[in-house]
Amino acid sequence: NVNNVTITLGSSPGALPRYTDFYMFYVINEELTQDVTLKGDYEALVGDRADQFSQECSAKLFPVKCKNLRPGSVIFEISMEPSHAAREALLTLMKAGDLDLPSFDSAVLDPRSLVALAALAYPPEASVAAQVQAAAQKAGVLEAKLAEEQRKTVREQARAAAEAAYTAGRAFGMPAAEALAAAKKAALSVDSSISEDDATSFAESVSPSRLASMAAGLAASRLARLHGRAADEQFQAAYDAAFRVAIASGMTEEEASAAAEMTKEEAELVDNIPIGEIGQAWTSTAASQTQTTTFTMTSTSTFVPLLSNLTVTVDGAACVLDREFVPSQFSYTCEWEWSETKKEHSVVKVDPSTEKESCPHCKLFMPEPVESGLAPLDDEELVEIQELWERTFLPGEEQTLDIKLVTSATSISSRYRITLKRHSPWFVDARYEGTIKWIATVCTRVLTVLSAPNFLAMSKMLQFMELTL
Image 1 (cartoon, rainbow, N blue to C red):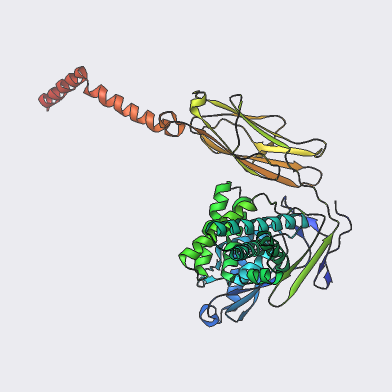
Image 2: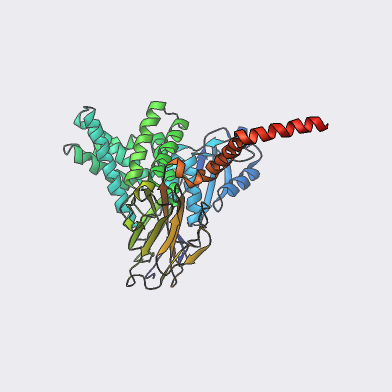
């Protein structure tokens, strides 16, 4: 339901938004634009092939468009409608930290451009902004504690807090003013005697390279989360991308490692922050080198179908998930040992439940629980499930189970992913069963041939063949 919606883009009013996929991004019939700068010499990199560059760039970042290429290092303009696909393309660009096109040399993004993209890559809802600000402040406090452990002065601890909070906020798309506010709060929580001017100067002294490193790392973590990766994979992706971009921006390996570690910690802090849920009111400004785009939405409410509970049982006993179930978290893991029952087949039951009062038109879709050995479950052809999902697992079997929750009233859906894994010793592991049977068959045949009676019979047969030749 959308009530009293007003959207302005620059000075032109936009159209009424419509829903897209379950990430709940809004699409307006206007384009957002942002200038992006690449490091390098324009003539050497592009020369007279500006049209070809724009075409290949647009193809790589589709549905984001690249246009208005011009010198000044290498500057081009991107434009997009704020859809899920466009934001994912921006996150991918931020994660890489460079633009690699088929017919052109790879070019590194200018750190300031990389950070500016964060304002477009993350939806600026008020409900999320408050959580981002809290996470940024917490990052500052954690950095201050680290400085304290290193026996630095209180003022140095306050500086570390301000720098960390500002870096985290800006990397996650917060406007500069809001990131400065978070930095001030973090610094004052460490040293209440410090002036606001000092706290501001601490935050503003953060290098663009450090901001770009964290922006790339958080983008990598978000992409991994969107693709259903486990939490540890998300955080490692954050570290790897942050380190790579830090090195490309001119940091030493020691500086890059410290920046990447901080980025990994921040990715853990923002792990529970949802993507794309629209709050009651929000206002954001996306800054460009040549223009400022402002869009405002008020009094908005939406509905995203979420599970109320998720229970997994293995042979009648509850399987403890890798994390406590939270409706807004979509990736979980359930692992158990063969030694717990020592049965050939382990019965797994998955019970995803919703509250009928809050989601009366919701339907659950999951893969057919067919017994197909070690073949992966079909995550494309999902069928409606009325009751428990039940399937037997062989020793050593691992499957990824997709659960899609759809509300028939609006066709909006959410998708959960559970990794189910049964650990077992190698000698009972179904993955090695065929190999073990083959080895046993070969050994049996060899021993049969080498047995005394068979060996004597074979010798007599060879002697007979010699006499007949």
